[in-house]
Amino acid sequence: MDLSNYLLMKHELSLIVVFLLLIFYDLFASDSAKKYYFPFACGLFLVHTVVCFFFKSDYDSSFAGMYVTGPAYLTIKNVLNIGVFLIFLQANAWLKKPDAILKRGEFFMLTTLTLIGMYLMVSSGNFLLFYIGLETASLPIAALVAFNKYKHESAEAGAKYIFNAVFSSAIMVFGISFLYGACGTLYYTDIAATIYSSPMIIMAMIFIMAGLFFKISLVPFHLWAPDTYQGAPTNVTLYLSTISKGAAVFALMAILYKVFPVLADTWKSIIWIIIILTITVGNLFALRQKNMKRFLAFSSISQAGYIMLSVFTGTTEGMAATIFYVFVYVFSNLAAFGVISAIEDKTGKVNMDDYNGLYYSNPKLALTMMIAMFSLGGIPFAAGFFSKLFVFMAAMEQGHVLLVFLAFLNIVISLYYYLLVVKAMFIKKTDSPIECLNTDGYMKTSLVISLIGIFLVGVVSCFYQYISEISFGIY
Image 1: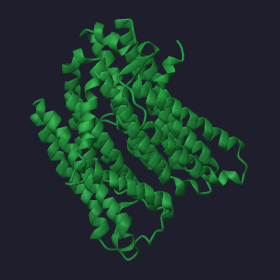
Image 2: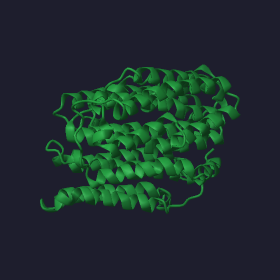
Image 3: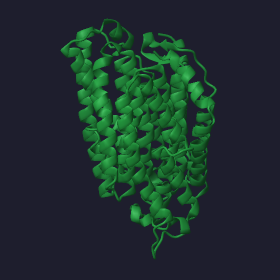
Image 4: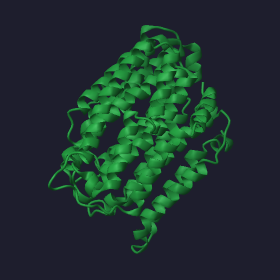
């Protein structure tokens, strides 16, 4: 092992520098200087995000193949960076509250630490590194979920998350131990070369998939999500529903494609059922929700089913559709949760009925939420329409007509409950609407970037073309 092994870890090294600078600033800055901590942290992470776009690498590996990188890996990390930066911008009003202002440093440091873990998950070529990355990402998230520790809902959400995370992690380790016992190695490529169909191998694969299904909140591993999303601070909920889910989807996709191609028929049969259950259950339960955070929790469960539809195909087109869907989903969810966060921070209101007549008092927020709902529902010409179109095309090319048909029927259900929000804001009237809100510049910047992303990513075809080209080398 020499220094050259670390040179491929450009994203990780850059983020570690950010993490250390945040620690030093929080520890050694004077009280008067600490009031600039938020713009310093956001500016520092913006520099990291921009610099990472200049990192280039062919498909290569280091540490004897434990760490792998390439254009597709760099792209998904850049997508995660954009999402985290926008989440940081949206957190300003929340972090100014008395119960959070003294913990601003902890929020930024815990978030960057989880992102380092997700980087390792994405670039792992060995189950040991993958598990280290998984735990590095999971444990700080539990602290973030319980960030408002003096609020009962937040503490309860943190306890539920950590218990479920420990259980799913134990199941995954059990599966990895089975795989190691059967193949004698933890390297993805070596396992793929020696793997064979047997009850022990299939059981190992199911256990590993189950652990990641929890992270993606796929049915029936979704029960933690609504309570956790509702109890956690809204900005942490946004992080869970977008960044954490996106990294877990890419990690699962890499494992299925690279480790278990021989068992493709088996895992495709499992995922076929999981997709239908996830989309249907997520949609049906979303219909019954009045709390906006629980509403978007079940919406995100349904969206996870559509993401898995592209993973299910097991093709390069499916991989490209997965990355593109995650990219679009990040912008759409950021816009929706941004509006919820802006309203909750100022008024404390999170119920759908509270949004009645929102357009007449806060037209810009209402229009932003409407566009986010259109994108999540797949209405033309928001980017969400194109992401679903590419997913369906990838599945249809493999002949999965019935699966696509059932998924398309569920879009009709999802459009109904997404339009319920639009109806509340634009059609329903109330005697006591939410007062006119003056959001800060950070929130406005985040919402504007999210809206630009919703339209630009869908209209400019070069995004999907580029993702399709880089996906060929990931196998």
